[in-house]
Length: 167
Image (cartoon, rainbow, N blue to C red; front, side, top):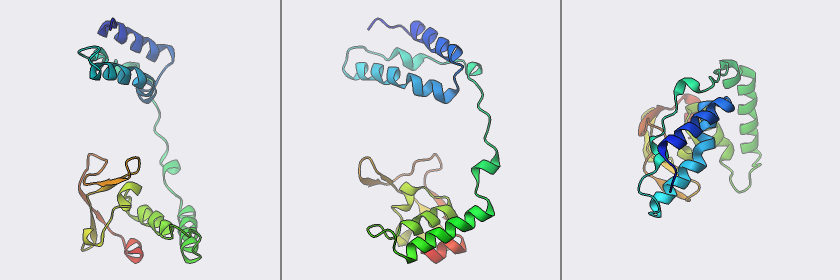
């Protein structure tokens, strides 16, 4: 109850400097403190979360170099090996319980949809050569919700020929 915004601000900036933190490291490290104070608000121990007003100086964050595109995409040979392995697993019924897993992996690979989205697709989501992405599966709640994870939200995704073969 005695923590002030100034104390938290000084603590946060000291953390960033002392450990040369990236933005992600900072937010991961301070999450417990932020959530603890939010819980204190919920329990009516304090009226306002003082950490919500702490705005770290973005110039202090260690810059994280962007990974090279070569490490972020599959090479042609890797792509072909993945496709071959997935089709082989599907035809050989490697996954006895979830037989469509190899096809789901390929469909995600071809279209870029997330696993939480591919799990909720329906035939009536297909509109011509596009698929309407409008739902996602929340694994931790074991339910489908009528929204998507990203800011892009509801969107239409082109279905390449290889993905149409899967459908």
